[in-house]
Image: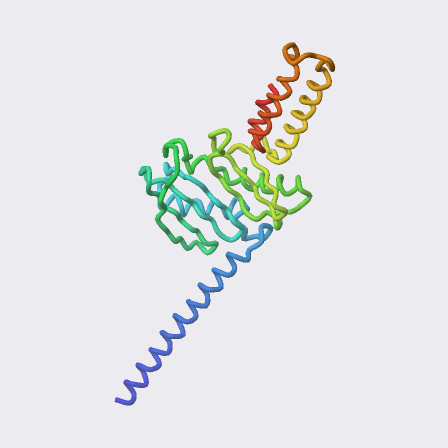
Length: 243
């Protein structure tokens, strides 16, 4: 009897040690995922690592699956996938150790589902890695300074694109194929500068003693200024004001 109890006690201790060690490993994996740097060998910013994570998503939604948004962090990936429902979706978090956690997603806001999704197969992991390097280089930084990358439908074009966010609070974006890498802040600043020059040109060309009834240039300048005020920082609207 004593021997049986001793054996059972040893087995219980072994089981406790096993689950205790497993719990410690899981906690360590979670910590590593959060603390991972963009330039690390295991970073999801590298094409091979990201491909492995996307394969996990494909296993859940199929190769023909549609994504609403793909958020890529150095240590993990979050993929929001469509289910065909206008108000329900699926969200997957893929840890760097391959673990997949799923959460339901409630879809809200205007627009149709078909206008807000893109095929998972259209995401080229090599393009993602290339843009991460190019965007950080534009800011004279490195991959360690890239906080995250978002693949989603661009609000101004209605087409899927890739946005690279940096630790200096700036971001660069490009089309899904990597073309047209640009900084929206710079685009908006350039458009505003061009608009201000256009306004100044109209005001300087207006006749000094022109009567209100015959001064055609002044209303144009006023209309342009009003258009710019309404456009705010939207570069597309600012550009349209000057055409």
